[in-house]
Image (cartoon, rainbow, N blue to C red):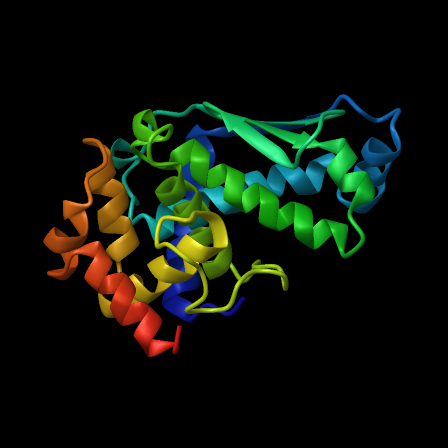
Length: 224
């Protein structure tokens, strides 16, 4: 990814502010092929640095230079485990599948970095009390951050693709990127509003159009 000088400076300031937060990674699957690959290709020291860097990046995207504006988190932890799936986050605890790491066919270090950026968003984003009913928006925000970090994998959908704006993950991330292009900082404002619970009216409040109209405009822009 490329950042202008001011962006780099702001991230350095945010990284310094991360001193109040601790970042820790452990591998409980070192005796499995995936756990061994994690140790060889990624490593715990690198993973802990990614947790710190990703947190600073999220605070920048969310426009949260002041710790008082963030979710109250003292420690972010990563556990590499012999589990199915890819990864999941509960509270501030991130769980990464050693099986996924072991079976991944591409550049596993870059992939793990992208997955961790996504999961770190879940540690810091507001509104997760409404995740069950509106998971698409929260997963979309997480992938939006991964996208802005330059860590979107090649298999993601292209801009304009997808069936619904709240389909989640890469589809919603691309749509949110469009919304953010209409008003830089849109995702930061959306995240702040989600602290009070989810409402589609937030799109009207921030951008002046309802989300269905924005989705139609987005699809039209890319010939979808």
